[in-house]
Length: 222
Image (cartoon, rainbow, N blue to C red; front, side):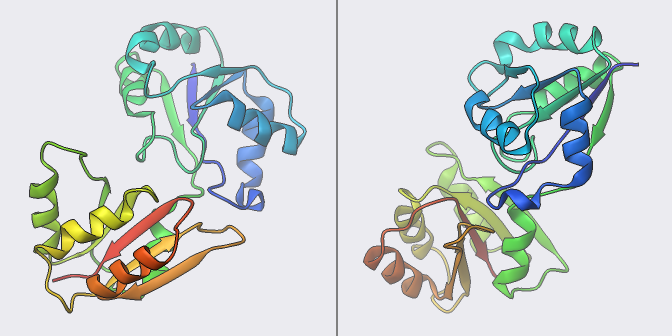
């Protein structure tokens, strides 16, 4: 039976890849990648030579059925994103669902993700939490922010460095001024940084320092 193997890749430090992930990258028939250039850099680092095909958010609807047929003709196919676990704020959901509908076996390896390290390092309660991913850019954004501001569980979300200040100011309109928030960036990389504080303290931080890299925001429970 054909099998699609969801294979997490490092979000920063390349040493975070698992031995099992390396084995599947070596043994698979081919690799589906979000950005083939990023994946080829990883493969070169691991000294792996393998065919890599593009599957990303801009083409997944158009090539979905073609890719499913290609998987059906193979034994084991690996799906990776640029960093972390495919399907978590990255392409993958549509393909996984289509493979299930076509009775293709799905296997998901455990591995790197930014959600759990950020949640743990925030210092906020981890027994109950909700993951919001990226907020909508326009329609429904304010509604989601309002929901987070009244959420009784710790909330984890992603944001890009050039939008983080704007997002914090939008939260300031609705959130209690003493509510604790953590901004974590560049997880597992050389310049990993964690800043904890109130919404105003984090706004001041984002305005006085140019934030770069991938950013995770953790909001404490209300």
